Length: 294
Image 1: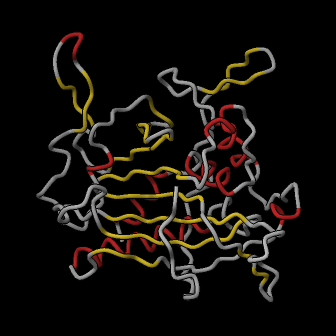
Image 2: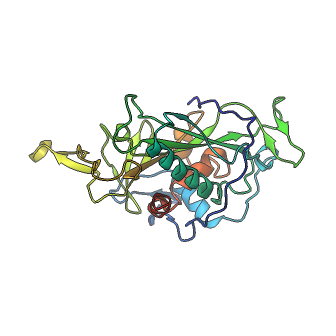
Image 3: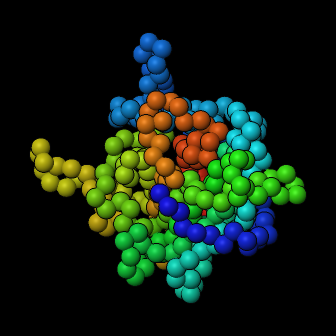
């Protein structure tokens, strides 16, 4: 997946640190052993092949070393503050922007990204609906944290004076979106992970986190034809436009990795492995409530 280009030369000052609720975060469901293979499942019984990545990062939080020179190379934080695009003029948009900036600060302190090796980091984002059109009542916004794999044998790789590295190119990313109903349209949960509904986005999983008393999904149809669909009345227009009413999280990659994950071959220390580990080893409801209360 080709990533949105960022202004990598703009080195921005770090934001004040905020205590992140990563201690005691989700570590995954029970493991059912089948011979020498381990099968992880969502509560619905759906096989979740990426749980070994979440399990790794629930146990390794101290700065694990890469298993080859590129994977072990200290990474560069290209920018500590996301560069946002889209409609930035409205006061409600500025309020959501501040919340996403605070969320970015929290996530950069996550064990998968703090003191990163094997990848450099540049966050970005924007204010728009996935499918275009005017902004809805609840402001839709996206924070994307891009992680660029380091390749020491690439002639374009930059080594900075502090010993960190950056290799230009395509990035893996974790994308956190708020209030964008386009992301739920046509999707239904296939199970839950620690109480958070899981839907599929292409060949990837996406977590959905609610900050509302309204259900995320409702049943449509009757009898054998009944199915879950996004609640058409999900957005509460009586709430301020800047409220985060729900959030989605998924990982996008610069190359197909589904087979690698299914076979347990994607390294937890790769950029994509780190981001999958973050996605399924973070207390997203706590983070959402923390930044929404700001």
